[in-house]
Amino acid sequence: MTQSNSPLNYLRQIAIGAASGLVLLVLIIGGLSLASPNSNATNSPTNSPTDSPTVSPTAEGRDCSIAELAADKRLLGLHAQVINPATNEVLFDLLGDTPAQTASVMKLLTAAAAVQVLGPNFRVETKVFFDVDKPGTIVLVGAGDPTLSRVGIGKESVYKGAPKISDLAVAIREWARGTPINTIVLDSSYFSGPTWLSTVPDSERTLGYQSHVTALQVDGDRDNPTLETSPRSNDPIGRAGQALKKAIGDLAVNATVTQVQPGTNLQQIPNATVKSQPISKWITHMLQVSDNTEAEYLARLVSKQLGYDGSYASVDAAIKAALTRAGLDTTGLLLKDGSGEDETNLVSATFINSLLKKILNNEGNFGIIKQSLPIAGESGSLANRFKDLNVDAAGHILAKTGWTRHEYSLAGIIMAKDGTDLVFSIATIGDVNATAKEAIDNMATGIYRCGNKLSAETTPKIVN
Image: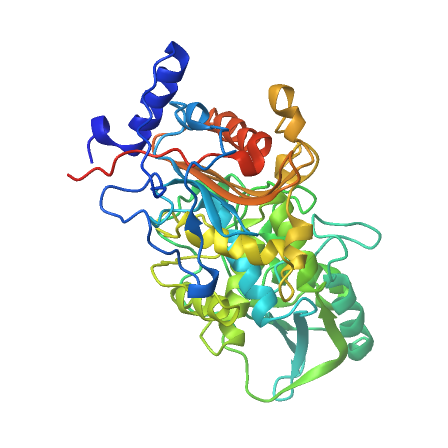
């Protein structure tokens, strides 16, 4: 597709024409959407036949346009779709059926997979064992809880109510009864495969947005456990071991901390078990602040629960299996991680909206996701957005934000001005910068103002 005949260029022509008093809209009876050149605008999205959105024509009463907002030059590579979930009508569509990278909107899929497979009350247990054949040797076994915390008694990490290394240390000291601990073995074998994707820049770790994914770590491997964004290390397993050694105190002052293969004759130390908060709490925190580490761990835990090996390579099959259980058609999805940091993930706006419809309707345990979404102008990653000219939409949009090097995105639920509930997905992809967020917010506010009067602006089908 060339720029001269792209759907977005038609939108810009529409916007320019409206400003000059010209009529440039070409109305197609039957209601074609703004589709990609090689797609059929009447194709059903990935849903069951009885639940398939249909493109709404520019019908009587549908006279509210966001064409000018969608033509904003800051919205490079725009993929967008708006659906009225009560009627399954597509009110706006631009490349909605075309799979594209997601940024952190991927966390909606991860959250849905987690509540579907693990259930909202699932907790991760971290345990300490002793080696019967090697007196003085204990084994700290990770089971995939990045919230396990090294902060002291009476203090909190970014993960409120997280289990404490200090509680494990108390149990170890009671068991040891003054006998020194000689060796602390660290077992992080619960997850398999690489701990970092080569497609994700190392700066995401060094700047503090994500940790290595290891089955054993503390505080999401943050240098500062109290800061959401804090540099992460190259040895999260070792950091966890040193935290346990310090917490045990004088009994372990001379202990060697090692990551060798643990022995086979192990017994659990009495009471040396701590449990994470239920994953419903993880999901709320993950969606509110866009915690990449929590997202990756949830994806790995889903993998393990479904019998896969807990590797990055298993994420695609595992999350697809979970979403299929929820009645979603995952055809065409390509899922490389749980956080959206990998820019090779491919998910269409149509699929995102089909999931959002289930979230809106509180299907299964998906109401947890709805309750956890940032609120425009009020909470989480949307607290400082939808101000000034967009302030009327504040409090009326629940959505997940997304940002990578080449994308800004927003997807969620709009409680429109006219009382209509809409689901939407907007992604701008390419050589974008932070100003794209304002353009996205303008577009979402326009959807809020139009509500069910939003017209599906149409363009002639373009054939290359």
